[in-house]
Image (cartoon, rainbow, N blue to C red; front, side):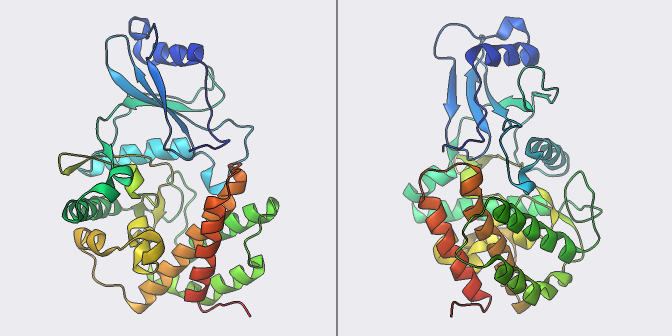
Length: 329
């Protein structure tokens, strides 16, 4: 996936990174030792074969000169913190961090190495799998997501703080950041920005039901799940984690918008979550609103020249506005 946030580096810089992480004896030479992994939307990622044959993945954060959305600032630090929490407190398979560098000495951004995982991306192979196999994987994702959500925080908000005792304040401020990002770049939502703010305010009381901060991935889509031999081999891409309401997880999106985000039945079965209450459904619609806003606005920040995502996301925004009792007149 192409994006101006991808901070590509020369082979010389990549070799210098390998030397710093693994030592001079493992620096690759010759041809064919590096290839870009093209499925990500934000960071650039390289698959690298070291001189001794060990295969690794290098992730590099966006360059500082490229403007990102407010919630994406410091994303690589968030990912490193999330990997540490998940690795220490769950059995969910996540990448081991071989080496991380935040010095900005070899390039203008944070970067880290992790082992390459030889497995299939569920987002790619899922549509071709037998229905029973795909359902099994979805249940495993639900069970893994529940483990991640079992990690308790001391306050709602970013992993590194500052936190807040009110989920309503944290979430509404988060949406306000997204709207402000959109206004700053004059992104056309197809809706007046203040109308979106009013819809959020009208339904924000549903957020008060959430009283305990839990670690949430938020971005745990099939495309961030690696599978092999009927089991999850690894969950990747943790840069959007925070302490919040588990219901904001991607796996629950289909409870309100199944046509857009897929049926949540198997995910919920694996998670062990009963059908949503009326208040939970309202909350989940607000989370779909937040997601749709990001998907519209990020296309401008990432410099998309193809309007496919923008057009699709605008339709989803109108769909969720209707679910929140707001239709065009």
